[in-house]
Length: 490
Image 1 (cartoon, rainbow, N blue to C red):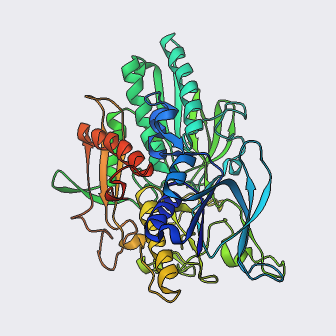
Image 2: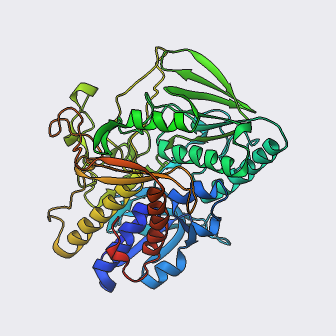
């Protein structure tokens, strides 16, 4: 009997675990280690953050789902990896620390035959002084929608802003990225337009100054270097698409910005030209940068081998070309295909946990040497596709031996769909529905745009909102392993 341990129970980890258990059956063990007791459909957190959904609409308990599936569930935090075992015992293991109520802090050595790191990111609020922690425990300087709890707090603070606006006090709202190397511009993009939409419904839009701030070099970069997509039969750049939407909704923007410091009601930021500026606010939702969760790894003799498994930013080393060099040398083939660690063949990474070989967007920095560029997005659909591919590979290794051909899921050969809400409503909701192929541009295969415009397109409107609303229910159905869950694509 083989034991597969998956660290992380988000989109990538949950996908890996549930498919692996389905394919392996009861003859092998599948174990999920996650510090969270609940699963969160993160794309709908933005609706919680404007009061259009409750926290209970976007989360559910994991324990009953895993019990039904026959998956062993450990509510714990992984701390160290020992891929060579220890003196006198070659069995690899990880050390986990319980986060379960009543046993917090208790540690355990959990052995494995195969290990998948799907921990997602650490929300690195500390990277920007004063950014807080998303839960109002640092002076309510800013809020976040990165977790369901963060989104609940964000809505509480936003409600106060609307009340002040109704009382005749003009309010300044700032939404975007809280550091020069952030990813997840998409979540902030959705949130700012949902705020704008709710302000109109509440009759306070004219009392709000709403502004966007981002580390993107241009609107519509989204960490993917922008894209050209078919809109109404014409090829349109995401820059034009985004600028048109911001102008139509009367949302000002600051781009190419690194938020360097947050104080009560004020941020300091640096632009790509090296100049320093300030922006005041009454309400700010600034996405923090991501880093790896901070695992350490040790050899059998106790020596530190963290650098064999992880890059300095904490993300796991996989089968990518990390020595691609300058931007001019970057190729689609630099991106990983199997997500297997090159030093330990029984260890894989999935979703945000893997280290990209380099950015997708062109690297940018100010004359002061400050990096101001989005890091590559690896959430949502790509995370699910990668998790399923890794599950395939591990199951084949267990059943047929470690020399099998591994399944591939390169982001340079992967399409993705994104539905970005711009306001929720049965008859007046809108969303930008976009597809992109491939996620990482391949300029050798698709000269000029780097992508196939036949499969890269977008539209905005009420239909897009309904698609997002339907997807919310579909993916929660899938995550709960309800009848037909395997038929719903990643």
